[in-house]
Image (cartoon, rainbow, N blue to C red; front, side):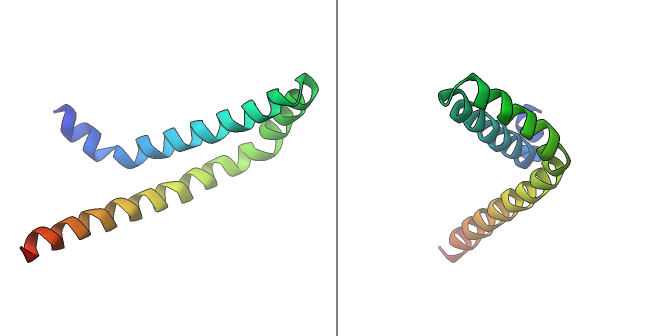
Length: 82
């Protein structure tokens, strides 16, 4: 049952992981520049990125689904050719 659950939601898990990594990298970059820059980055992230976050997530979801379908198709054609 767990394998089916992860297979059905793999694209969502990859999307969430990539979003989390991108926000962590932005936070890390701001923290290296000082507390004022970190605070400004967080305000900008909350004010300007919040409306775009869902659009970014949807586009990322489409790209991950396309990648998974391409890999799946390549594996199917490779196994069928042999």
